[in-house]
Amino acid sequence: MKQITFLVALICLTFFACAQNDQPAQQPKFPSLTVQQFVDNIKYDSVMVVDVRTQKEFATGHIDGAVNVVWGQTFDAEVKNANLPKDKVMAVYCRSGKRSKMAANRLVALGYKVIDLNEGILGWQKAGRPIVTD
View (spheres, rainbow, N blue to C red):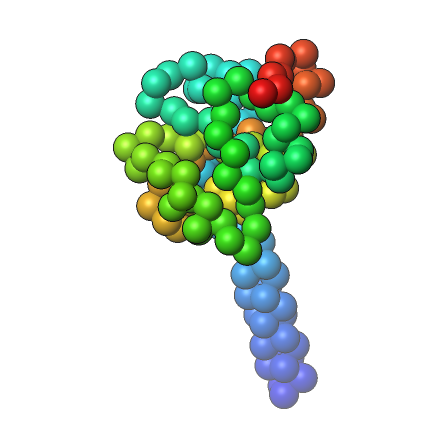
């Protein structure tokens, strides 16, 4: 009898442990968009395009109208210095999409509404979209 009770308890524990691991990951607090979805969103005046790459990367080519707010240890100060308006959606991108997601999370924490270009400027260029240099 003790063996059956132990076995039932073991099965229950295994079931509950597996059920907890099947919980969906917490969804990001911003949408990560395809190139076309990003294009469709940035055409509005209520959206500001933000490139979070380094100044050197930005100078090699960026999305027309983008402002450069470098992701890194001083990001909060960069955001403050850039005077990003909180009444606009920040359309964030980087090279491949990794830094922009970190920057997007931080912008959300700072009270901004954010969208992210999932594949970054590499995806943008692969889709044949134009870039500009200043």
